[in-house]
Image (cartoon, rainbow, N blue to C red; front, side, top):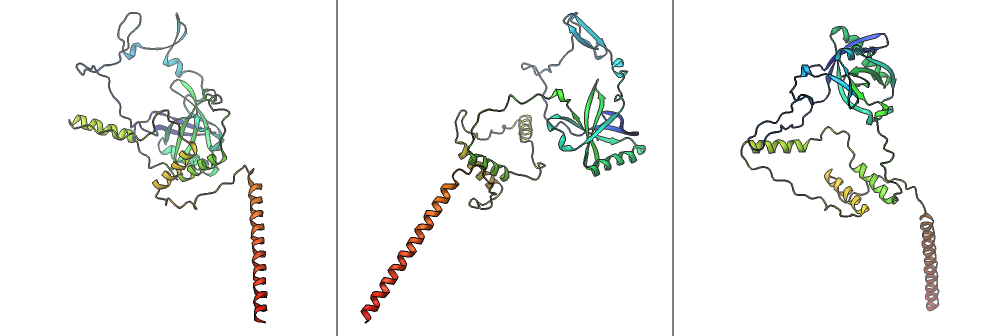
Length: 318
């Protein structure tokens, strides 16, 4: 387990639960250094004062808020710590809500909350089981890195997870982003729904970072003086090429079926969704009536011919 990022407590009514905050994820990306192309020397970021040009150490650097170009108000770490916040030393639970009521867009980083010693074991388990049985999540406030934050506590594999939430005013409205006045055929919508069902999965645990794997192969080849891997053939359509939407949907459904081992001709297993538009239904009923009338007339004509033939046979016999 990595080192705790923060040590404090969960405030649950009058219950206090000592906890340690541990990152729930890790950065597996490959990071690069900047270097001088001519001699491969490292290029580093140096903190230099604008006024005297001197390079500064971290001990010589403080925080400040710029009110105007010529006026900056300094704020020390001690002043931030001593701010009168009830959440400065604890993660204070303020309410319980259904998980579905939390917009996923608001979720930022996630952290595991480990119990802080044996004294925290019982209240930690109590909160965890309360969340599980109520099928709710806890909304909490806490102060971290110089600001008050909003969080959500949720149970994952018998551990409590803290999801940091954005404040409501930090979420931009998407109202102006959606295309307007777009006409879609009902068949296109139905085929898109069928594509979502064909591509449905129970979980996403099997996905891998192929870019990172290719990057690792590139670095390994270059470090060993081997030939670098060749790029895969670009099968994407040319930029700017317009494709028929329905044809693209049909091709996508077939490709998804093949990738899952489905039979190409097994179209009877597809779910049929009721279409909202029924304008052509009367025409189908009329056609059905005409077909039935034709069949009835044909039967009558056949019966007449049979009767006439039998009558003629009787005359001949007599």
